[in-house]
Structures are given as structure tokens and as C-alpha cells.
Amino acid sequence: MILNFGPIKGRRRLIAAAILLAGLGSALVIYFTATPAPANPFGYEPEDTKKYLREMEVYGGKANVLASEFRKWFESLWHGRQLAFTVVCLTLLLLFFFLFVSTPLPPEEDASPR
Image (cartoon, rainbow, N blue to C red; front, side, top):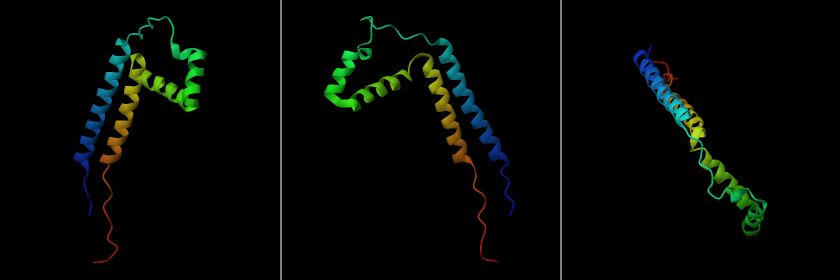
């Protein structure tokens, strides 16, 4: 039995193109309209001083310092031009997930003869 997946392939391509267009278009708009992050009103970042890092390590250990650095990095993904790169990565992940889920499986072969 031969199955025709013609209309399904066309719809898959259309949806994939729409995902790419929406995601990459949004990323371009974000990239060109993003403004730099405002400076800290204190003039410096307390997290960058050795004294602050030492106190964090004393009270919470190395895990506390690493968790703080991870949190700071993760927060930076959602602001300014870095957000545009995050949107591109999420768009590609969504596209690959959609293509993986929407790929039709091959027809099952019967082991028993008729």
C-alpha cells in the first residue's frame, strides 16, 4: 500500500516557514531596537567586588557564588541584544521540535503473510 503524504508535506513546510519567519523577524526587531542596559546608580556592581564575593562564599560556600553567577548570566539572556540571540535559539528549538513531532512514521509491515 502506497501512502501519499503530499498535502501534509506542504502544510509542514508552510508551518515551518511561518515559525522561522516569526521567530527570526522578531529577533531582528529586538536586535535593532534594543537599548543598552542602564548603568547602576551606585556607579559599580557590588557583585563584582572581592569583598562581596568573599562574604558570599563565607555564608553560603562556593555553591552560593556559583548560583549567583548563574543567576546573573541567566538574567542577562532576557535583556537588550542578548534577548535577540535567545529568541533565535528558542525559535530553532521550536522548529526542530515541530519537525520531529510532525514527521509521519513509515507504515507498519505485517509479519504474517495473508
